[in-house]
Length: 228
Image 1 (cartoon, helix red, strand yellow):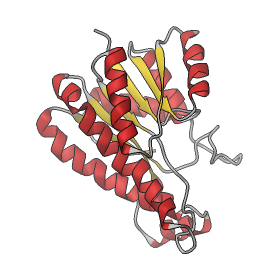
Image 2 (cartoon, one colour; image 1 turned 30 degrees about the vertical axis):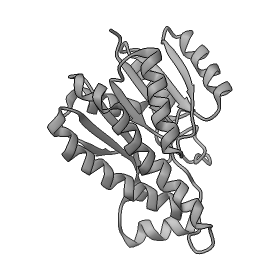
Image 3 (cartoon, helix red, strand yellow; image 1 turned 135 degrees about the horizontal axis):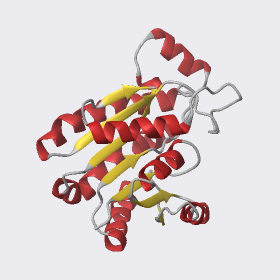
């Protein structure tokens, strides 16, 4: 039976590179984002490279929608082997003026819905000796005056809070799921990634480098968190 990689928060950049990295290693892919038309275009593009992918539209800020999506993927493709959690929200940039609901949306995307995905897919993950939960973290998760000052200057305060909470969740999942034989790996991306929304022309990181690091973590399973 084919191994299935569930790519949550699919788009250009990191997730597209991860799709190609794992797809070339024999994984079939379940691509998840809100825009079904864009997902279908990506499915067709990946097919040209010999990679099997399927589109599953879902709102990843809605934990119930995530649970329902997991069931749809399971019915269509079989057991889920790996979850890659990649979505983020840049809402609530200024925590002093933003609606509290915007901050809640950030937390939902980074934390609550990730927990929902792990819970829904856990029977599959526990049944596979090759299972994993892979998380795209960010340097904004780090504590310190310099990071906090930059987060306020860049108007990404809500994202910083969400990534800090997600980093803690990654550690908790690592400790808990190790007992179930499920590997958890996190890449903290500490720079700008070329070709993404944050790239203003000065980005230094290649998405393919990050994808390779994810695959290295997945295959070696020797460390759980690394930085790029």
